[in-house]
Each structure stands twice: as C-alpha cells, then as structure tokens.
Length: 472
Ligand SMILES: Nc1ncnc2c1ncn2[C@@H]1O[C@H](COP(=O)(O)OP(=O)(O)O)[C@@H](O)[C@H]1O
Ligand SMILES: O=P(O)(O)O[C@H]1O[C@H](CO)[C@@H](O[C@H]2O[C@H](CO)[C@@H](O)[C@H](O)[C@H]2O)[C@H](O)[C@H]1O
Image (cartoon, rainbow, N blue to C red; front, side):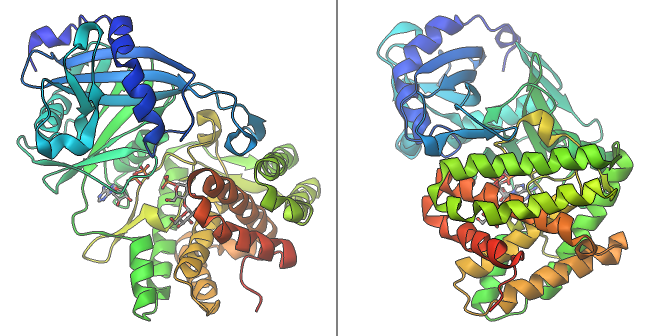
C-alpha cells in the first residue's frame, strides 16, 4: 500500500451510489446483517477509504455504511434498553475487493458487477475471501499509523511476522474472521457502534495484567471518531471450542464434568482479573431494582415479539420480582465488568487442555453503554449454565442428568478459584438465568427459528419450578 493511498481521494457519495443496488441485494443475505431477509430502505456512506486503488490488479475499499430496513414486523423488532424499538439505523463494516474479472476461486465471494459510476465495468466482491488482499491488509495492520479515517495500532511487544497466509473462517456468527498462518486471527467487527469496543477493551486490560486465559490483542484498528473495527490476536491452533467438544463427548458417551469444572475455574480467574483491572461497585437497593426492572421489560418486549413466550411470562416475572424484593430487604451484590455473553462456544480448549475465553463483545443486541456497565458475575455464570442445557438438548440427550451434572461441576470449579459458589445466591442466579433464556428465545426467533424449542423448553422449566434443571 503506497503513501499515495494514505490520502484517499474517493468521492464516497458517488462510489456508494454505484454500489448501491448491489449492496442492497447482498447485505440482507449476510449472516451478520441485523435486518436479514428484508429490503433495505436507507443505505448511505459513513466513511469510504480506498486502501488500494481499483487500477491495481485488485482494488481494496474499506466502507462503513449505514443501513436501515423498513418498519419491521413484530418479530424483528429490537429490544434495546428493555424497550421494543424499531430497528435503528445500523452501521456496518465492509471490505470490498474490486477487479475487472473475478477468478473462479473467488466466485463465492461475488457481490456483483457495477454498471454505473466511478466503478462501472468492475466486479466487486467480499475481500475477506481474497488471500492477496487480506495479506496486504495484514501488512497494513503490522504498521501503526493512519490511512484516511482509519487508525492502525499495535502492541509494541507483539511480533507479527510478515507473509502469513490468510484464510477466511467459514463458521461465523456476529462478525467475520481471517486466520493468518495458524498463528494469528483477525476479527473484523461487522455491526459497529461509536465507543470503546469491549472485545478489544477487556482482552487488552486482561493482557496488561498478565492474564493468560484470554488471547492478548496484538494489533487493532479504529475509524474516527471512535468506531472499534477489528483486532488481531494469537490464534489457538488446534483448539477445540467448548460447544463442539461437548457435543463430541456426549456423542461418545464420555463424561464432560471435568471440563465443565475447568471452564468454571477459567471463568472465575477471568472474573478475578477483570475485578482487579476495572472499577467494581456494590449494587444497592435502587440498582438491584433497576436491574430487575430491566429484566422484566426485556421479558415484556420479548413476549410481544415471540408469541410462544407469552403463556410463561407471568411465571417468569416472579424471578425478577424476587430479585427486586431481596434488594428491597437490603441484600446487596458486587458488580464488575463481565464477559456478557458467555457460552460454550466462547470457551476454547488448547491441545494442552487449558481453557481460554474469547469474544468479549457482550450480547450484540444490547446498547454498547449497557454492555460496559458493571454487572453481577451471575450474568456470565447463568450464560454458561444455559449453555450446558443447550448442549444436552441439541444432542437429544434423554438423560437430564448430563446438564445438571455439568452445571454443578461448573459451579464447583468456579468456587475452587473464587471461593464462593454461585449457587449461594439462588435468587440472583435464577433471575439471570431466566433473563438469559428470554434473550435466547428472542435471539433464536430472529436468527435460527429452528432452534427456538431449545430455550423454550428451559423457559417452561423455569416457569414451572423456578429452575432450569430438568425436574423429571
Ligand atoms: N484466538 C482464537 N484462536 C482460535 N480460534 C478462535 C480464536 N478466536 C476466535 N476463534 C474462532 O473463531 C470463531 C468466531 O470467533 P468469535 O470471537 O466468537 O466471533 P463472533 O463474534 O463472530 O461469534 C470462534 O467460535 C472460534 O472458533
Ligand atoms: O457467539 P455470538 O457472540 O454470536 O452469540 C450469539 O450466538 C450464539 C449462537 O452461536 C448464541 O448462543 C446460544 O446458542 C449456543 C449454541 O449454538 C449455546 O451454547 C448458547 O448457550 C446459547 O445462548 C448467543 O446467545 C448469541 O448471543
């Protein structure tokens, strides 16, 4: 990337106008696009940066675009701050490759052929699939400095070699990732919000404390004014993700409680380090009530969006009322920064058996400010407890003991390190587990309707006996 390219001269309005019809067709088909399947009513540029001009064999454009769908049907409403809101305008990050003709191996990355404007006659495509472009992008990440509105930073102690071969990761959920030579992984955030991205903030803080449970950021980049856009971390080659591993071990009839206990210990270690690195607070009566009210509001909103949840709402509400009551009686809890969306898929086991935690972004649907608030550690514990239930259900386990045993082992592992078993606070835990199950109902309704029965089964149990453990 030449010096000239550091002064992008593209006319962003004209450029996006020429890409407009192609992006309108392509964006709603992407897994990370929030308004999936619906036509886009607004599409406008936020920033356009020419990383490589289209005149080179392949050009590379970095785009932040604002997109909004039409007034959504009830199921697609967003629950933000506990309120059902029309899906606000979202800002997305795109890396677009530009070529005269697309070689066959890049055909799956095709966005379309441009017919008008500055890129008329060119073919545009998802650059993450192009090893040549992603190799150049890593070079850019290796060099701290600015490139138009983009700001690249790097941990001075990190040694990122040049020439690492890139490959895009296929299994993505909310974001996109490229692995470099099996030693580093670049995560590109897709739906971006102005402000500090906790998926960079927390791993950086943990790394500075020497916490080895989280891959330490080696390089990262932002856009002005304050969009966190991506982070490069060491890639844990050969690691198993907890979700795949649990399903595999279930399939082979192997015991998972040892792993569950180890994940509990890893969670407690990360919590201990986060509490030491960032502010903690004690939640008094007013804050506990605010938390309980937020949960109740999210329940109301989710029940409005997902009719199958409605019959259980009154019984679920009692979990949040019990929390508010305990707050009223003067019970207080410590709150600190937490992972925010912890589940088996966020736990990686290295070949030596060590567990690490990844993806500190929090629940993607929540506003950033809310995700960065101190919260009881029960939020993460509840996420993991729900995950054991998901695994048992997905494996169609007839034996409910599997999930119950793993849930118990996880809490024991947590207590090994934290000195306190999360089950010591049953009201707090039940409220958080109920809140998580409600979130999952909405998440599945929006993203994977076939999976809706999984959290709904837990909702039924929580409504019936106040516990997500099966009562058979
Ligand atoms: N440091 C890492 N080492 C190995 N694999 C990783 C690492 N970070 C992420 N992954 C893999 O990439 C996948 C997606 O990463 P994640 O941060 O969870 O992204 P998303 O926010 O899109 O869910 C993970 O499930 C994991 O398999
Ligand atoms: O990994 P993400 O940050 O994208 O998290 C979202 O997607 C998860 C699904 O991949 C979802 O997790 C739910 O399904 C998991 C199994 O696929 C299960 O282990 C989790 O317990 C369950 O919550 C997560 O909720 C969502 O935010």
